[in-house]
Length: 144
Image (cartoon, rainbow, N blue to C red; front, side, top):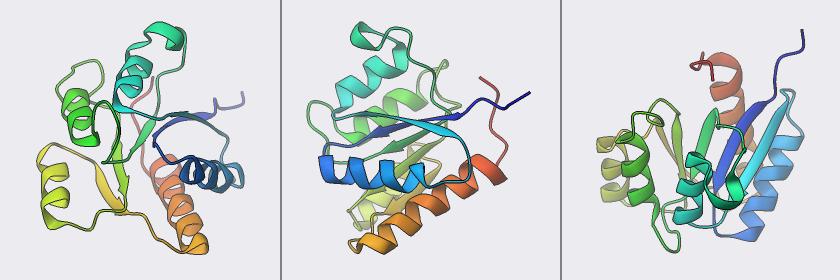
């Protein structure tokens, strides 16, 4: 039996970062499907299967930016981790912020990891591939 592709939800408002992440994940050795939304409200609608997101698969992993329109990444993280139906999904903060207060806030609200986005293209690609290798091939995640 062929394993189901891993479902990844990228919550990111920068179209360039979406494309870079998609490219990094498409080169992966593991089958995956990346879904993306560009704001925090859309992220919660996706996760709850509401509106245009009815029938979308539950993600195995969420890559979440901090600075988002409509509902920021801090609010989205808190909402996910306070929802019994969603809190088991690993959330990786993937952001440009190096601020200690952002790192501390993320972990105090149960983020599973905090990764500062590298500015350099090749380093960004390497970071995304490393996340995928770790979270989708080494770590055992709860079954859907």
